[in-house]
Image (cartoon, rainbow, N blue to C red):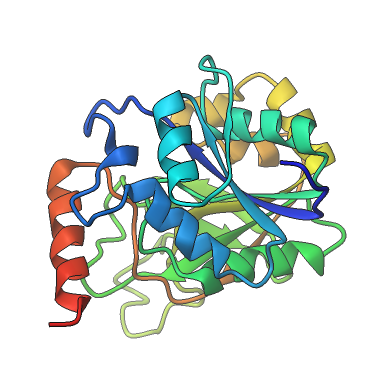
Length: 255
């Protein structure tokens, strides 16, 4: 990236994927999945620029062939956050927004919600998103991460278990829940200085127990602020989910 930017959207992308090999380059729609994500992110009004941070030249080539910006990063990053930190160090951006590379239907407004919240919340280190559960989603599903918030919008805890939990469920069955069960949406906006600090810490006990990286932030007493909005899109982890996306994509094409 040749120019300095304040708010940088970063799409970490790996070529290898255990459940869906080379999914970043899946292109049955006519363009690579990561390019779909890039095009959606470029429509977010809160980002000064967007770049794909790839671990393989093939991804870089696909993005650049589509007219996008891409950076070849180290292959040994353990996760997308670590890859994001490399981009932060190389670009000098003040705010970095981690946009999942397997969400081709991500809404630009969702990116804006997290980014703008961090920009207007000076005490927060990180901003992320939560959504009310949809009718077809089961809050008891451990694959769907839950979050509970304080009155100031700060995340109190993330869990794969259903939280909050009524102790006396039968006694309170006639009452509406005092707080909604919220599904965490894995999009993060980080302050660059905090991001470098975060990746220097070892994995924390709760993080390892729940397999949730964001708990490392809370265990160190730092703040994650959460924007709530209705979000129906999710990431693509399997070929079957990609086929479902392809059907939706084709249904929207002009006849």
